[in-house]
Picture 1 (tube, rainbow, N blue to C red):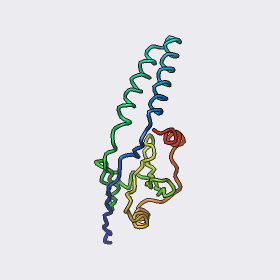
Picture 2: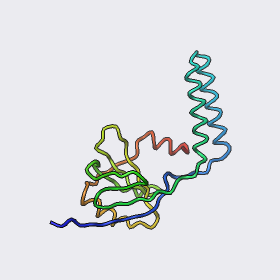
Picture 3: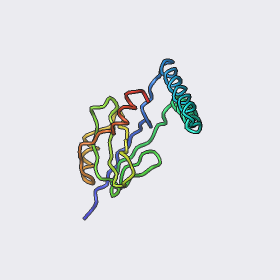
Picture 4: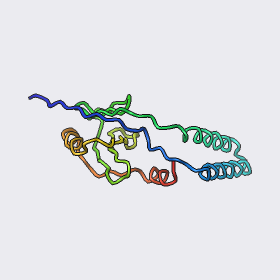
Length: 156
């Protein structure tokens, strides 16, 4: 039996970059200071330091432009940037075309791995990707976790 070989490639952004207003930064700063002061008043200085360092790291990261990833779907698996996800480690997939930024959601067989999100490019033939993925893993309805949906709504 001859295995069919195929290769679908495209480029996509690492994450969706959103422009944030100065009000967003003020809100994050005010919330950070309030939580840090509350934890200091309650005697938990280590937690206050953790909150301040976390907010500082968030503010540094949030302005970084997204990296462009090269994505490959072939008969061996899905490659996103430098990471390969072989089909034998994946449970199922779902192509989310209802989201403003289309993406493939992959559910891993690994217990502690969340959903893997693979961005779809603008010029990708979605039907071709779906047809080829169905040869290796089943399709099932998947949605982003509730916490991730809330973070996306808040602009993170």
